[in-house]
Length: 477
Image (cartoon, rainbow, N blue to C red; front, side, top):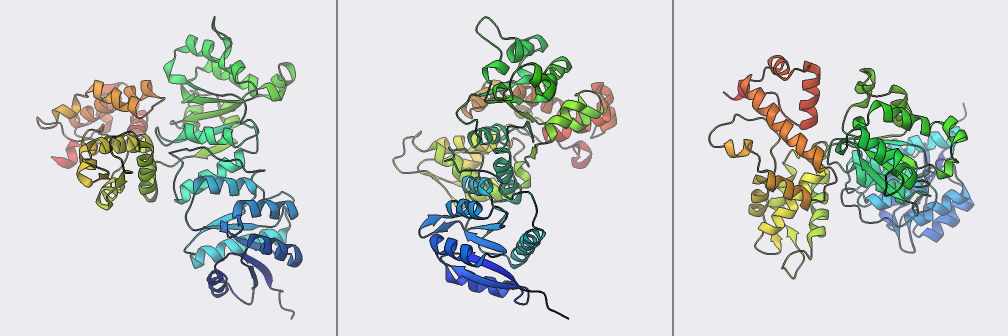
């Protein structure tokens, strides 16, 4: 019986111990490793030996890994390249995804993840798939995007998706709770696409009534054309698209469908639509509250953004990123820094307001800190002033919490640079209503939904969306 030939794996890394470790991790009866320590040597090796899989370090002595990756893709678009990084860097990952990375690994290397990634890559190479693996074209320098930081699997998938969708001008649907950074993701898709030099406009749908939305979006006004025309050839972001009335959903659908393109304007003059929502559009479509055909069209390109509480490993990096934005805003001559205990406290928080809430807390903590070191006491003081989102019995001691200080709330949101103030104020009022009502009913959702005049399913959806726990009085009395 003839043995199966070994797969040739090329390792391009300036640290010779990496190739040694990989030889130990991979089955020597299945794989044969060759290695190079610079980008130029790696390219020569790949051209000469034509390996089945490449493991490429993100930073080499003579080049960035993303630059070498593009040259590999130019030479062989179907060669799977696994991008290896010391730490997950959003912009670098997006650049690698756009340039054609098949998969990503982080150092220190996990043997199981290495074996899985290499096996998948080798199998893909053996299938000789018709489609190219490249998830983008050429790298563009990325601007600063504070919320797009993290090393969690969820954020890594977001970075990959940005690279994929930057290659096209098809509609995209961003799904996630308020404050997770959906607008930042939309901006990065735009800035990495061929539309980067064209307009980037946003419309927050809940901020307008039906007539105002029609005028803002399509009809224009005395001041000029609607946003649809203004964004021609660029990107139009529709925030909280579930608030778009059905009539305007129909109008939008007609403009996005190919039949309209043939009758109306060339595709190059239409805006690329990126829709964002914190609602479950599939449920709304099933309930006929949102056009199902529009939902299907938008959801063909979907990015789900996980809430911060589901990616706690990103909190420290985000806090440091937000802290760097505050440098120069205070009186300290030296850069601000977070104490280890302060970071630990931040990681332990549930963050119902996600990245927006975290940024607001960091900003307040910097103001509370006596010097450049933002200690745990400054963070504790900043956390006390944030809006609460979990249900707790209202007593004399916490009656001040139930009565929202709206001036402080609005000031905090304005300082955080919000673009969703109207919906955030409504959410804050609704959150307090639901908390108080559940305390009154001792956590009985059936009674609460009857008193609200809504279905129990609708109440549960609101509780999830607002981060309110239903286990209130009954579990704490």
